Picture (spheres, rainbow, N blue to C red):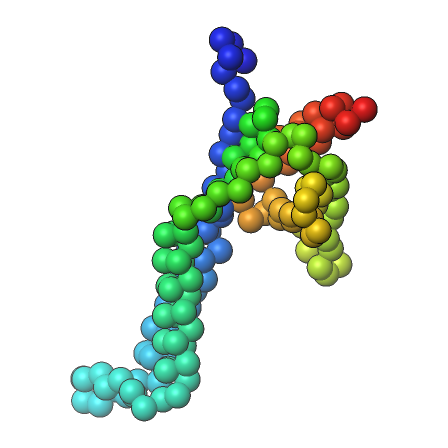
Length: 160
């Protein structure tokens, strides 16, 4: 922190799930169309009256719409020495260090074979419910966890 510069880091919302799901749904749609189509004398006729084909198309359209919505929304978390900011393209909510009561880290295990999801619960003054962050939802989740731990230690030092 030279000359009053503040250490801040921006963590964008991770959209890789949406990209992967769209690719998989598109491949399944194409494969199903090829399998269900009819080859008649060196020509291919697509069966368009198949409800499963419509269902796969609807799933693909909904997935693309969800991706576009999240791209337009452009969600991110900004952590600095002063506090934490939850923002998107349309609004932002900032919490200063003195507004945060407590940060609690936990792990959520879904099944016995899957890795645990790390989460943080941020208890804020003037808010009934805590703000919950799932680290796997953001890019650079290990660095986000490290910054949150630094913020937690800063909050604990200021409350003592």
